[in-house]
Image 1 (cartoon, rainbow, N blue to C red):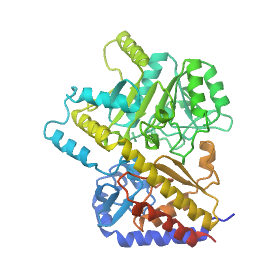
Image 2: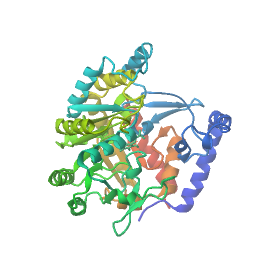
Image 3: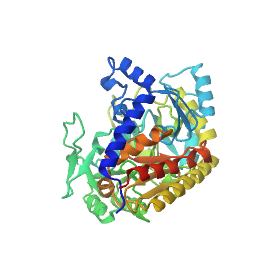
Image 4: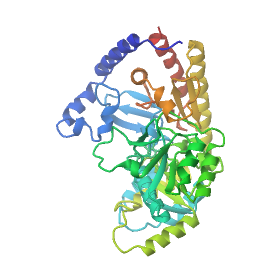
Length: 451
Ligand SMILES: Cc1ncc(COP(=O)(O)O)c(C=O)c1O
């Protein structure tokens, strides 16, 4: 099979690392100056996990472009791993933030924009009731707590290969015999996650039904397509089957659309007619300002109100002080009303389809049997002939060296893609010229690494 040669990849990786070092003196200067004060020299340790010799420092980011400390400009198809999905710093959001910042940031009280934001959320995502928090991780954590409180059931079910933020319950793997394993990489975990989390393969309805049959699972938490282990789309009818199995067993369905909101207006579930009990959207929902929202049905809201009324006064563990501040409301209103529009989604989809076609043509010409899996504006170059069926198949196809090498090759030629697997997300403000720049780079890279 035509594929990269390990020696060529290793040689190219070394050359590209050297090229990065030579062309990014200011980033290195900033890295050296930051090192004494920050763990691994960065303000958040993941920033060091990019496959670069030293961190890339950002000077500014606008629209589809990011400019690094050395003044080099990149077409950004990583977009902060979705936070900047509609483009960096959209003008309506930047304006709303500046105006609101002059009038207050946070008060632990509802702002006057709240009714309007509620109406926009309900209209866009199709659920009537909402809470506003600071991150998708928080939203998922809070929803799990609600789900357990409402059902009185101890367990949650996730799919193998999932990622829902740094929510302990979800950071699990699945053993060959189906047991839940705490992810080996999870630092500082002392609780036995197998006691509270069930994990089954995605796209496996029988496994799901068996797991729910015991009646001890409070909720199924899933993305409608797994996006954090490569991209695993649902087989036709699978998500509808998940919903039916949840209904039949009194299990709540939580859709995490933090990434899949890129697949269409209101998210994958809205486009495909799903009716989840809870919906989580974070990252891009307020233009990249730290914000997430979770929505729920009226029936669920009634159960939440009853649970809260029945609990003693005191800390509920479902909220944080800065959450739902007035700055977030201003950003949410601007983003939902003026940025994340039907026209923006139509444009993203069209550009993404164009990029997918370009990449597929390159693969076909090179005789490489890899696929470009796309849902809406998000696509993934996968080292497989067809999209994976589940997280295990997706993980087995990963080739970290190829990924690091292609990532750095593209970065050194002005294109940023996500660092850990090849996700490319196309913002509505990109141009045809931007997306057309990417396939030739893949062609050149393949020509150089294939033996
Ligand atoms: C599907 C999904 N949900 C939740 C999260 C958590 O988002 P955050 O890190 O902004 O809390 C992520 C992060 O990548 C995600 O991919």
